[in-house]
Image (cartoon, one colour):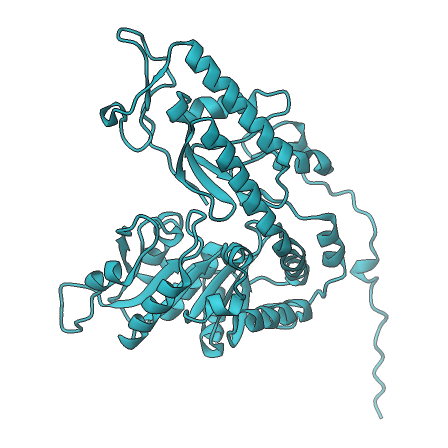
Length: 434
């Protein structure tokens, strides 16, 4: 009988506790951060939270809480591409139940979730997608529907200037299969909220019923659907029911470090998982990210309605100052025109950042989130009041003459004849970001 002897193995790699290898510091061109924190490993996160509390640019700026890092440390560490991570799998099942769908897929971003949904819905081109002209998939996803899916977009401007209706959509649908000049409509994508406004549920149901009758699928970009649920006290599954598939985000407004989810029929999600791999977007040990997202839903969702109240407070006080409200605060977002009191948005941005305790604003949009400090809102209101008085002292006078307004963000204050406008009083078309 032959006896085989197996030699002792070398030391386990995990037993190595130290190494002399260090990454080089980033060069100036490599670093995207400002200041010395770009080249150090330890950061002042207390200072970062304070900055975020005074930042009105977007709710994507919310930062993970300390509790999130605790649950991240205790999460499972399996491989999600192999579908062997317990925390991620359980979280996907919980979101599927919450939305009333059969299955769900945890992904890195909302753009990825939307694009996976579009690619999975659309089988054989040619095909087209109907959406709101202002929607994220049409405006802020880098032409992804055309690039990934070869889809033609049919963007529609809502006639009521708030939300699409079936009367807006129906005439733009391409239904005739024999029509060789156009791409048949296979998918309608709605967004809720859109620019902070709530899409009326009764109109969503109406559009979905008509669309399904015609064999057209429905997808919702519900990145901020949490805000709709919080504001209207409507269950998530009720908001999701009219749609075949749903995208929801955990980092916008909820504070998770990363993550969105796509929910829909089990067979659909299985195929979306395949496309996720094709897109190079499969993630391995996602348990800690899923754990943080789960805690974000459970702890941040109850705080959202308070952010809406803070936005409405800001709106009311700005109106008292004479600032024109472009889009009222239905949730935690509002759009304003400070030029109604002689202040160009670029000037407000500049002055806000020069404060001893800076504020951060961008163009016309103000966004409140669960980490917004109410004192920051008060400081912003005081700054607007101060700047308004400065304009009055400089001789600005209000005008109701529409011809004085140059474009969507044109000037609505004028000087006496012959006075030269300062350099910042120019027409500057602005865009609203995610």
